[in-house]
Amino acid sequence: MGKTQVVLDTSAVISLGCTGKFHLIRRAFSLNSPMRVKEELVEISKTKDEIGKVAKDVLDSKFIAFHSLSPNLQNIKGEVEVANLASELKAEAIVMDDIQYMKKLELSTKIPIWFSSFIIYSLSEQKLITSKEGLSAIESMKIKRKWKENLILDYAKLLFENGKKG
Image (cartoon, rainbow, N blue to C red; front, side, top):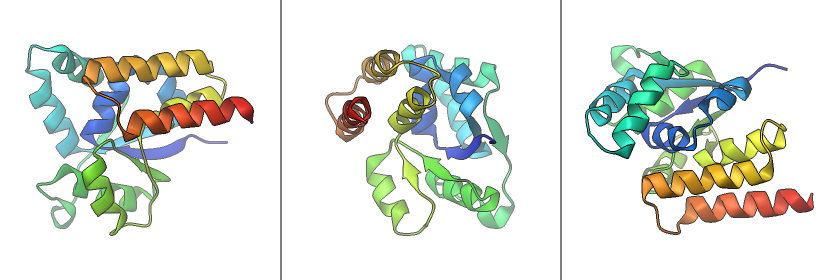
């Protein structure tokens, strides 16, 4: 069985980078993003805070394949380019943590859209990490992203709670 091909937007790249699990994520997933995401990560990496360091580490890891899009598929919005690349690659999913844009994107694509927390949950389902390690990774994401309780975190908790019962 091959790796699940996904396309990540900048929000998901940062969230997953906060977990320190990219080395495991790439074992289960083929990670792709448009060049616009790389450009955004380069800009973020110039900041002298925790998220800037995460962006730099992700770029240095070379775990993500960055793709140039033909001019007719390029857009000033990274999320649109993510959807265009996902269609081009026939990806199995788009991964993003931008809840507001996710709702807009769902109206224009048939490709499933996942939160980054689902990627972490998938690692536990594939026995690459334990549920405890998965929840710890989600907590790390929450702390580094400075998130309060939100839909992404609630979704992750539900996944792990229901997974334990199954």
